Image (tube, rainbow, N blue to C red; front, side):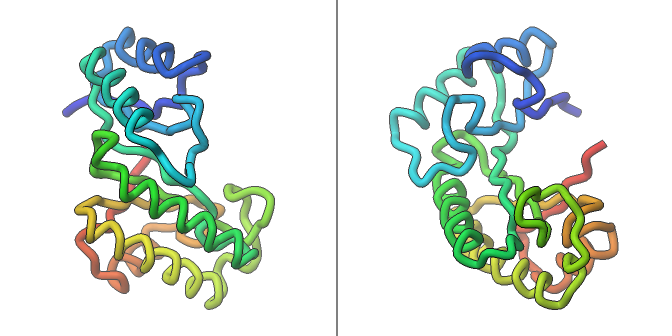
Length: 184
């Protein structure tokens, strides 16, 4: 077993500070968020220089990027916002390996337009499930092309809010590129 941590656990002014904190705690694995490098969590693009500087910062500290956060509201009620965020997640999936990982974590989302961690009565509707599937189908198509795994975590306030909902999703999607995250 390897011990790791979510990078945003540490508050530091820059990437070096975040990664130094993880290394100084004796950890060797980090689930990364691009915000720790002063970038948008889901950038529209990620140039070679940014990718290489992130990889080098991990290498210098002997840390492994076990995953990168691609979190956005996958069932946002505004279809255009959902589409734009999905395409930014596609960009991240396409660049994950160049960053040094083959795993991208996602949020299944909520119909709450302002807070993707807040429950909404429509989360359990057929329309919400359909939107989740549409979003995931697009992301999984790219994940398959790029040989990247996607992970979703059942969250009590999201459309996938239980082990049963996660099982249903895995069965329906039937993709070797989709996994479930269990956060202790």
